[in-house]
Image (tube, rainbow over all chains, first blue to last red):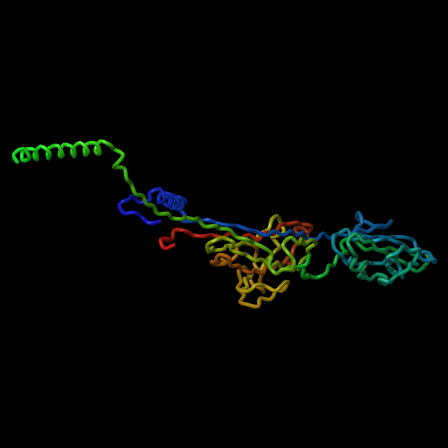
Length: 183
Length: 198
């Protein structure tokens, strides 16, 4: 708009401008105006655990110890191992057989045993007398999964035998680190 | 002749008296002098808008809302972040990567800036990559990143985040722990400039 000669400056307008400047000055930081944003993601670490179930488990389900008087017919015991963790686990331990001349064969099966018979049975280990032997009870057992174990000792007359897998020999093996980008 | 000679002065006096009367009337009215002219200038003054948008980068890739469960030692994952200056002025961006609770004690990270946008799901920067936290070979503890620098209005930074769960994380401490990982950005616009010219 043309500015007529001899008239006053548009005082009101400049007052507005001055007020805006003053508001900036009053902050003392010369426009420390900020915008913020964020992205959040949730993480949860895995939980590990196992449990043994059977008539000869020890330590609240953490170990195994079976002592008996062996006959010529031999003997078989059963127990199961359960993955109580949140990820697949490989569960193993060290088994020892004591008793003159006695040895043991350890079988595994996803189905139920009848004696040493089971559909899908696999031989996990043969444990010689007096030699601690590593036995992998379950390989890559899914979380909450259960696997059945049978321990068989051939017959010997009048021999007291102990088959043991102490809790402090048990171990859980996990997969190595992988790319979890997709979840 | 004599009579006309005597009448002339008298007529002039009458005319003068009439003019004085009219002038007096005009002067007595105050509204006749209130003629005015006006003018003005206007000045538009707008304050700046200072905002930032932090979004998942690499369309189609895993997003920050994709939760990760059952982390095991040695596990790692990538996330992509586009930080866009949605304001009206340049901003200097500062960012940090933090986590809640216990788990961050076993987490390290590598954060890098790529000069161009990432291809969906790709961890390869096809432009120039600049480390902002740790390095690819040696991720660093979670915390503040190096400054992302000044970003013009409408421009964006393309960041890649790699988080690593320590291969030696102690089971007793870090088993079955949950945490919220937060990537936060603050954009700052500084005033105090001479804006005389706009």
